[in-house]
Image (cartoon, rainbow, N blue to C red; front, side, top):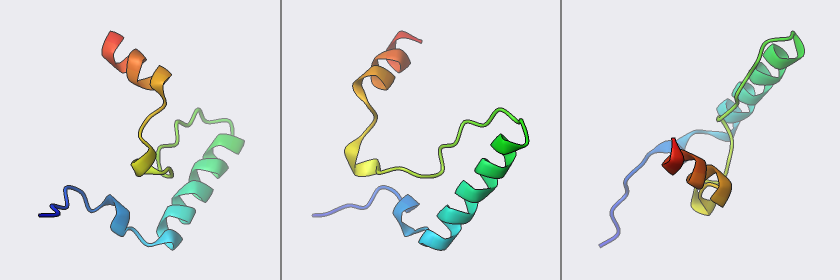
Length: 56
């Protein structure tokens, strides 16, 4: 059985790229931006990020 747990991969690339453009515009205007709109969920978070989350 292959259960699907998330629909985050169903977002059309167009929308993801638009969110990235918006984040970049905000950043260029001087706003502090932590962009989480793009990535490869199959790869998982880097080890340092996972360790920091556990420590928090």
